[in-house]
Length: 464
Image (cartoon, rainbow, N blue to C red; front, top):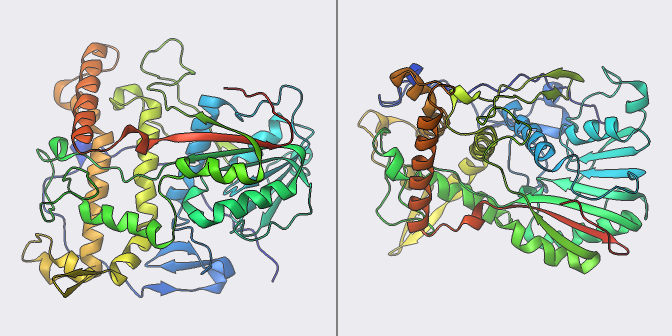
């Protein structure tokens, strides 16, 4: 069956919710819409590549372990990561000072954001963007013919043999693909990458460790309704408000044999098939490097709309709207949106979850109902209780990244006139967060992102 490119109607990211406009302390309304069936397949709407799970769009392949949904909010996070990396490291970390590559393969290309940007900067380079689902934009709409003639989208699973002859490319890259690569598959993947590379070809892989973002209880308990679980911590983390969700989140990757610390294992797998493997750590700066005059980062980058080929802007928070600087805000947003993207995979883990405890089998529903729900909430079905857990988690995370809006409204602060006060607040908030995580045993490396460079040939220089 011929593949049909799915055109997504994208919209801008919503700005952080204003805490003054949201009642975060009142009980969550328990009335729920009809949830419908757990999974539906509409070939007319979704085609053969997608299925719906409780209304959320997911790929339909049983042998593809990628757990995130394909809703526009989740796809936007890949575009946001592309913009962050471009601001921090440029188009690529690999040194092409001698000249750009002639043919490039982008693994897990998603919406093709990097390919479209690179095609503008490297006018003589051909590009192939590969992904398991056809969500890339149509190339004949809004693009200069000289650009789209050099781009080709390929729908394929990179955990299987790559559909290209030996020595087809001189540059292969992959960003944010680690959430879909089982630990046992990394060696095979790099063997295939080495096969399709020309002699001397270069490889660039950007990966980050998988984390469950949360607000430590020391920060959240004063303002949030508590949903508690038994007293013991989980994996050495402090007792926060969403321990069951955290457990389910990591179960998603454990059941797929995906290592949540890919930064630690990728180098050894690359060294088997490639040479001169080098790790370049990527540090998210506290403020935008493109801002020279305003210390709070007032400049707002423009993010192209990669579906329609037009320029639009994603509404990053202005300095007066957030105590977090631009990059910190964007990175935190990406982290908790990844949890939301795994929502249905987490529900599947809850459905199959059992635990042996004193010879008594405790099901996932038992775990859900063991939480301290109100009398009214206890009458709800398990799926509705699960929705409430997620709603409360999302509210808390939104409130965290929007907290300075409340400061501005309650105290009349503004970034220009109260720069010192914002700085003091940031320092104290960050100190409390670090101390809470330190005493919980969470190492700073758990939030690590790195770029791994290698080649099939002689040693090459790096642009760091």
